[in-house]
Length: 177
Image (cartoon, rainbow, N blue to C red; front, side, top):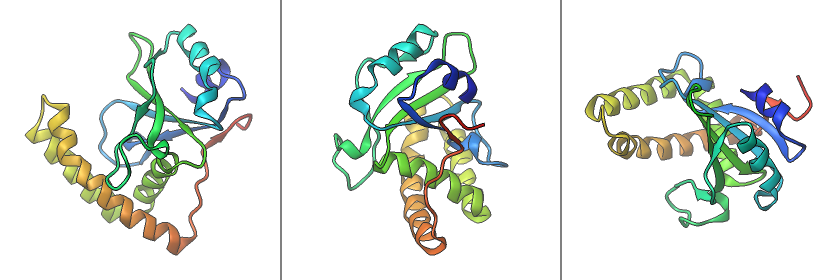
């Protein structure tokens, strides 16, 4: 997916990262790939969105906002563009976020912390499995139960990042292999 997006897009995309549960080895995950495209300025993504749409990807037409307790719902720190996979292909959630913003860092920190901390990963997996069991047909119910875990993990991950000197680094910088 990263190679394909890299081939389609221009230098607007600074980094392409595999994020979410499928990016964490040995973590149970739905068969959905989460990808984060980091750009310098979300306001300058029209050509990027058009290129992806021409290749069959399905972008939302307006900006969306991630949710995080303690930040205003329409904070620039949470703003993003959201794109889905082309019809008939493996499900993908593509999040276009701005470099230096809270939500960009959060996705990378969440991934790296769960990769580094087996106990947190196992407990998060337990929350996910229980939520899926309680709400097999309701994504809203599933997310309702998972959301507090996201916040708890973030606070622990932020402390971990400070302790180990973690800096957000990406898996694929533009032009690297």
